[in-house]
Each structure stands twice: as C-alpha cells, then as structure tokens.
Length: 422
Image 1 (tube, rainbow, N blue to C red):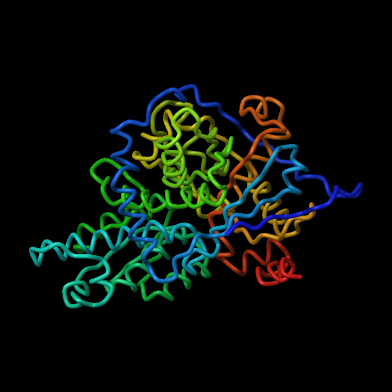
Image 2: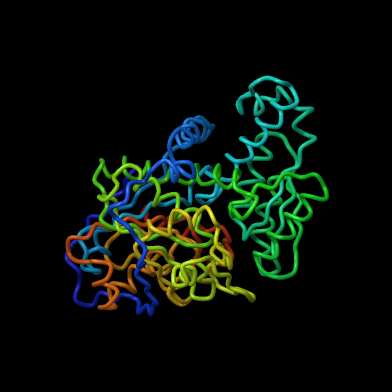
C-alpha cells in the first residue's frame, strides 16, 4: 500500500525545518563499479533470500507495510520526492524486526528437528504442532534493546519453543513488558547492549540454549545471515510500491549494521552501479559504524551508549554487515538525540500537508540524517542531494514504547493517527 500526500503550496507562516547538526563521513572505500558477486550473495541474496521471502510472505497476517509519499516535506527539503516505509504495522509487533528474528527461530527449529527425525521439516509443520514434544524442549535466546527480542519471543510463541531474552539496564519497562507478553522470560543485565549480548551468549553455552542474534562475530555467522535475509524483504516491497522506480538515495538506520547492510545488498545485487546512494545514520552516542568506517576496521564504542534512539544503542559492529557496508555504503552519518526528537514531532505534526506518521525514536534517524545533510552544504554536496533527488527512508518502528512516545510527541500514537484520518 502506498499513501500519497497532496499538499497545496507551503503557507508563508509554515514552520521551519528542524535544525540538525551532524557528522558526515563520505566512505573512501565505496566502489560503485564493483559487481555484487557470489561472496556477498552468500551473506545476503541468492536462493537464501528467495527462501526467506517465500517463508515470511506465507505467514498469517503478512502484508506489505505502507509506503507514504511525503510531498510536502520533500518540497520543504528541496528534493524531488520523499518516501517513508512505515514498519510500525509489521505483523502487529511494531517494527521491522518481525522479519528477522522470528524467521531465524523458524530456520533453527527446522534444522534441529530434522537432525532428530532424520527427515526434512517445514516450518509450517512445526507451527501446526506436528513436532510439539521435540520443539518444546528447545530454548532460544538473545539480547535486545527491545524490538529484536520481541520478534524472537513472538517466533518462539508461534512455533512452540521456549524463550529467554536478555535486556540491559536502560531498556524501558514498557519494552520489557512487550516481550513478556509473548511468553518469554526476560533477564535484565548490568551494562549496555553489547554486555547483554555477551551474557546471552555465555548463558546459552552453559545452559544448552540456542542464540538467535542479529549481531555476527567470529564463530557466529549462520543465524545472523538468516536474520538479514528477512530484513531485505522491506526493500523488495518498497521497490514494488514505487512501481520499479529506483530511488536516488536511501538513508538507513545503523545499530549493528544488519538492516542497513541488508537493504544496501538488496539494491546492489539487482542494480549494481545504478543502486541508490546509501547513507548509514547512527546516534552520535553510539556511532560504531562511522568510527569503523574512519578506521577501516571494526571499532567498538564503549560506555553506557545512553541515547534516546534505544534500538540503535549498539557499540559493536556486526562483522557480516561490515563486509557489505565496507564498499557498499556511500557515507556514514551521526546525529544527536535532539534531532531524533525533532523528527518524531515533525512526522507527527505534518506541518507541510502530509499525512501524520507515527514513528518511534529509532525510526527517524534516517530522516534526521537527511534533514541535517540538506542544511549542511558540505554534506549536501558530498551526498549529491539536489532538486532531482528521490529519497527512500525506512521507518523501522512505530510507538514501541507508547509512554515514551507520548512524552516526546505530546500525544499518543492513536491521537496522531486520528489526525491522519480526520
């Protein structure tokens, strides 16, 4: 579904765009002439991606998420077109993560059940309860800032296995409760997200659990590959909704890099040098991808990583994601928390005649990067943004913490949506 705004001319008293400061690092290693190639396709692409597409689109409740055309905001920014892929309705979980974690749970269970039965097994059989006794003895686990854990817990509930989710000390109680609603046991750990990842991994080894992480590291690659295949479905849907018109730019949230790498890979595999200019955007308090790009090797960000963009509060890069972004991303950008807050309000208030959009704290980093780049001459020139640019954004979550959303925006998501219907 594509929703299109039809604004009239901007009124003389129309509010100005938010002021967004940013750090922009054009990637000196990007190679727009390079073929995608078999090595990269082994990470995201090929038959594995097609298998994920067939599986996920067969699940009950699957439908493509909306693509909003924000004509008024595009005109205010001085670009040709702006589209916002709204993942807030994905399978009722509120974020794009529903595509990755739950799919990886299903893949793991089919493998383990096949090992025990000696025959190929389909996820549809597991979901129907055909191997209930075997599946209920399996426990999946992961660390999360909120959304990935919710997807893993949902997948565990859908397929009938047990689930333990680790959250770090600054994850909100609202996000904790949302995970528990799917029957998972939630363990809160000291430290930041990366500390929770290490604790989940250590406990999985000692307790015989199976780790379903969206972060890859030495010795742990297969499951994150499955997670990333699921994420790429967003890009396929978006291009179909654009009637095949390739965007000139995509601005993508960073985190550990899995989502950004998946979308970058999807466009790269299909369009090679005609793929969009890819810009990866992170909080300035958790800019591990930007620092990695500067150094040319994985660099960790230590400390609390205390950013309002909770889903992006990651200090260590996923190695598989870096393999794709190292030469695939055109630039890396870091923005402050104030920019995310301003852009949440910008989408909800819709001052330029567009439909109001509900977008959570981590969903708007890409928009913040775009707004900041437009108003920064050096960044605008480096990223080749002009009146002909057609920009695609991925709004990776809705109001996944409803209380925090209300505090930031000043009204609830339902009230914002009511404005869209009025």
